[in-house]
Figure 1 (cartoon, protein in one colour):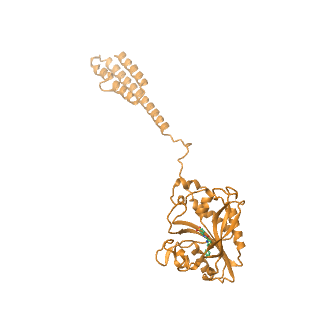
Figure 2 (cartoon, helix red, strand yellow):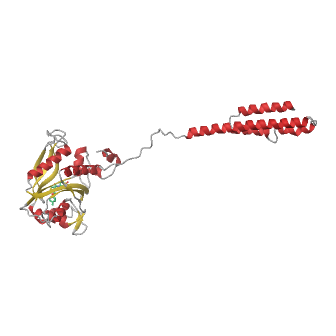
Figure 3 (cartoon, helix red, strand yellow):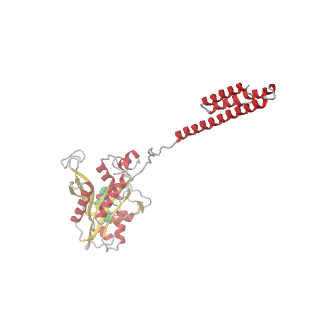
Amino acid sequence: MKERLEELEQEAILKVEKAETIDALKNVRVEYLGKKGPITEVLRGMGKLSKEERPVIGQLANEVREKISVAIDEKQSKLEDEALEEQLKDESIDVTLPGRPVQVGGPHLLTSIIEEIEDLFIGMGFDIREGPEVETDYYNFEALNLPKGHPARDMQDTFYITEELLMRTHTSPVQARTMGQKDGKEPVKMICPGKVYRRDTDDATHSHQFTQIEGLLVDENVRMSDLKGVLQTFAHKMFGEEREIRLRPSFFPFTEPSVEMDISCKMCGGKGCSVCKGSGWIEILGAGMVHPNVLEMSGYDSKKYSGFAFGMGPERIAMLKHGIDDIRHFYTNDVRFLSQYHNA
Ligand code: 2U9
């Protein structure tokens, strides 16, 4: 019986050593230490032993049971440690991996262009002014030498809210309001960027809502050469020092004389190409000397004061600068278009 117990011990210890999983170890425990196991069986058969043998075998059986149990416990904690180690290895966080990129937005191309133009004019001493987009008939038309009956007031061209209220068709009322605030005395030197509205059907070159930047300088002894100097400085800074400018006679109700300014075509250097439609020149803006009627209506003595004004469309400037062929790109908010200009 002693040999049988020693044999069982060796057998069990070997199986414990071979067990590679906790489940396998559990089976060993059940097999050797369970109620139906061989050691229990040995203990059950003790009745057949002599009085002398009984305590010896009983003690040995208990020792064997204890040894097997300790071996199983040790192996179990070893397997559990290994399993934990394995799990930690799988779940570890690699802090050297790059993070998920965050989608960063940027200013709309039109905003960038408007801010660039603002910066250029701030550099020349101009203030930035803003005004309401819902305007009165007086500031949008009357004060700008567009009297009742003028064709620009046509229902076809303007979004009317009432007979006296409308969506402004240009930013010019901001200049008229600013002059009106000065009591006909102080000089004015300002630009006004903002949204304007026309009753137009949208296509590649028209939008019912677009932006304008207009400028106004009123002071004593302001001459056409001052206008030319300011516009030339603007064109050189915005499009490059090598560009030439040219002023052509034009007409606006609020300026007299009026001009349109072209810059020499960058693509062909003035020879004529498809970009400038063969002329060598590209139209950039309109301008002129403020009409005496406009000065007088805003309270300035047109014999003492004179001024110049100009107006441009930031969409057109952006289209020329970046070769954009459709004004609708600015307003349909396709991120594939807009994101190209986040650092423009
Ligand atoms: C006052 C006096 C004069 C503003 C001016 C223009 C010429 C002009 C348009 C061209 C295309 C703007 O982008 S556009 O639609 N504008 O050509 N604007 S002079 O003259 C003023 C404005 C206000 C009190």
